[in-house]
Length: 576
Image: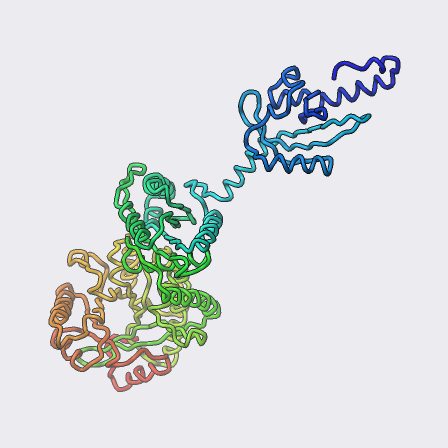
């Protein structure tokens, strides 16, 4: 468009306007192409050359199909021409091929022009290739995990929905495997998150990439969901077990040789659930069952598991409410001297009544949930505060009471401020440390965490009695026990069952009592329910006993009748 018609030479004004239009044509940043009615190119601008790489001389007289990328099928062009003929225009995304061979994406707007009975087509293309790549990157980020590059939760449900739709039409099944690494938190806590992150990437490279036929998504942390591509329940079972075996290897991470087994839960469509969300949730529930059964195993979803999970959710919700208003009770279970049958101590037990959960919720059911919720510290402080308030009331009324025992979770101590809070609370009620005994389970002590052992030693130095609860279930060694800051052992109630017929139980109880006596550690047996059990403990030299034979756990007003017996001198010497 550099040559002007002769008819304009005698009309300066038209020539000026024509020149202006030509300058605009060349200056625009969008690619412009003009063809005649037969689709022969008659003009292109500089932007066309810049974007496509073709000089004007190379395309004038050619058909625009020389830019064809091959990415569009016949139906695309049929729709294109139908709009152009019926509406006189068309616009949309078009992939073109540049002279150099690379593809570029343009937003093309084509209009039909009619000038003096002549038909022309004007195509204006905006290069949106970079925008397309940015859009792809954003979409990739939205649907993929940053660390592992695996599909994320959004992509999981999008893919699973499509798989379920196909399976429903073909009457086939789909399995969902929910994987959670065992002891991953310990690796993060002990070696740092950088090591944990690198371990995850190695697992993706060395384990998941070995099974490229399976769809693998990361939900977050150390949780993954796998959807196997094979069909048939037997095949799915083999795949799940295969992943268990795949983790039986070491990973070299920043100079550390790490091992991480995996727990897997499995659910099936359509036998277990019909929606993606339910399938993933049920597989998750089954995975928790695998954890509870010892980890490094596969568990298949069963309907009763959903009930348990729903109950757990209800407990979490209701417990938060109860804790916020202090609606947690404490009960007192008396302990007695085996030789004299007088009151020698009392264990404080937490009790929670929730009408919507059918009454009293068993501590063994809600305490582990509270620990998992991270609220055990708050519960412990509430229980200690209520206990101290009651003890102060008894003191003010002139009542004497024996050593008071409270249960402490290892998670309370690991928070780091347990000792300070303990001292602060009891001192606020003018109570002394030597009025208290702290019980911690043997299994928790066997972890050997320095922070826990140091805190218990500091409590002992303050005058608090330290007791190992559920002794005999944690497999502690004699040498290890001798090093612990412990003054009392509580024989787990399981060992008192069937003493008359199970000689092994009798032998174990005698051994524990002898061990305690040898080390100068007081021994108390819990779970005493019969006269025969009490007589056995007397013969074995056990110091104290506790259980339903003597009394169930009692509310404070009922326990006071034991305290009133102090007037008759039937409370053990160490009373406050």
